[in-house]
Image (cartoon, rainbow, N blue to C red; front, side, top):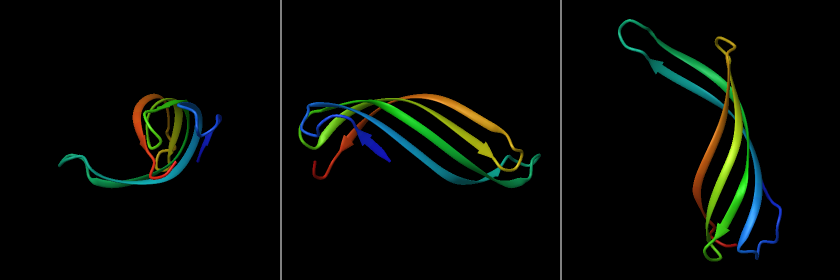
Length: 92
């Protein structure tokens, strides 16, 4: 889910987004460790600016935080992340 704070006609905009999900992992660590499965639930929030080159393509910069909880051993992983990416809209 993503929310833009400024008008869509601006050359630059600011956004915030949230996401959550469920993962199932299958792994094989080699002959000394057996195959196994694990599952986890994750939540993340990101925010940042986007600069549009035209009405359909933009360059975005994100700073975010995520947390993931593994069901098998009840471990928890928190992450701080930075990203750079492109947005491509079919129609803006």
